[in-house]
Length: 284
Ligand code: SF4
Image 1 (cartoon, rainbow, N blue to C red):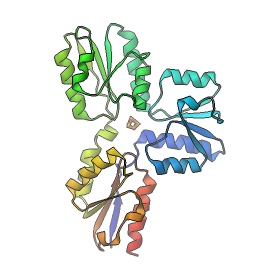
Image 2 (image 1 turned 180 degrees about the vertical axis):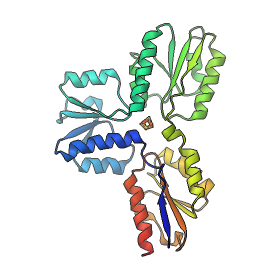
Image 3 (image 1 turned 90 degrees about the vertical axis):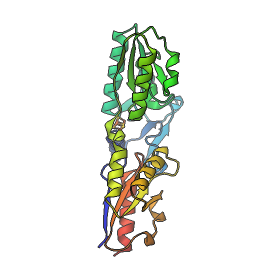
Image 4 (image 1 turned 30 degrees about the vertical axis):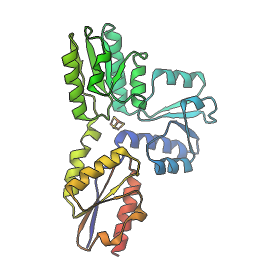
């Protein structure tokens, strides 16, 4: 009998699951809700939520939004967004991930307590979480993504460094080394990378190796999906990439094998469930 297992560590992180749950609770009560920005980077999941009645709006659309309930995603928002929403009389449904919220508070406190220092966010310019973090410093934090960018800083002033939660651990270590070499004053670095995502690489490698065949489910354009698929395939060459269950082929499997289903951080659990059911149906 074929054995099919879904990787318990694949799919949305708990911050995203929590945000979706919050939105669904509103929708189940028949209330309308607008998400400020795409809830997740997965077109099918956004489509599913929109079919339940959720709208997706940008900051510029706050005025035009017909819904009075506006959801702040797991990435969080800067204080200016909260102010705009309050000024417009919107009901804020705050789904900021508790880990991001804690990080925002830490950045704010450090900025307020150390006006002489430079605040560095190791992260991607323009990323929603980074915008929320920079907002805690009234726009004064430096966003650096590459070690050579440390030259933007004043070498004579102390530095406090934080990280966007989804950055790679090696990149953080490189940035820390570059700062310590360039800055003549004190450098204090806080590794604020979320382990729920950082540990996915070794976890998926282990999971893929445990099975005869693996099916990796992800959107074709997801960079995290491509990266994790390569990790899984390196660990188990019998790993197939699919973006939907209909792409699964029966001749990938034989009876009496063990199949692992895994996916990217943007893969909803229901898509992996669909893949599992499709494979099981081949052997009924
Ligand atoms: S901090 Fe971690 S759990 Fe929270 S949204 Fe970011 S990746 Fe997900």
